[in-house]
Picture 1 (cartoon, each protein chain N blue to C red):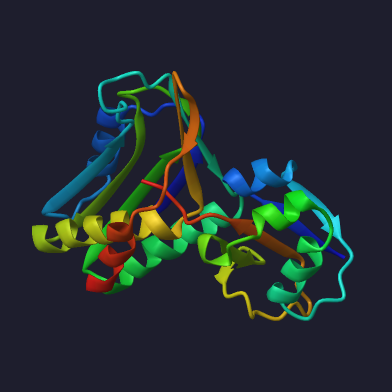
Picture 2: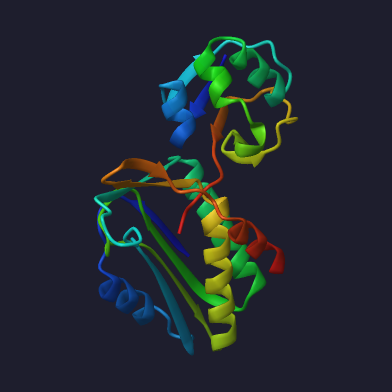
Length: 147
Length: 82
């Protein structure tokens, strides 16, 4: 169970390979990657992600531990970046390993749902008109209810 | 004395990321009242508590959470990770 919060970019392929190579007993590995979306019609200059050092690692660790307790997983990985990024840059990834794919898929969705609204990150989009904090969506909060 | 931290637009509105606060408040809500009374920028940041979330010693908490023995309180908007 690894948690990494970092400003530097990460190599999705290398991370997925390293994660997969370490899973001797897993029959399924699921990865999800979040990407910086451009503004509608383009024009995103940059996205800045702020976080709460200390609490971020604790919150992600708890979310990962909850997933490990709830599904039959052999491992999880969460990488989340902070700082300035451009459209198309990778923001974060999760990976789950399990004996069977259902556990791996469900746990990855669970990690994403909780990570979106329970881990202390805040996104700000900078375009031609200035900067706007991304508002949390009701759907993201509602998504937690299914778990 | 407790450390009070602000993130995202709460930080921008108040104009600083963290400060040490001498408080007599017994709860987070009491601390918010003291901060609101300080200056307009605090009153503006704390105008609508339904738009804010709070963490006490790095754990999400409610506004009625007690401050006994607490070292750190953070105020921020709903989180937008992922």
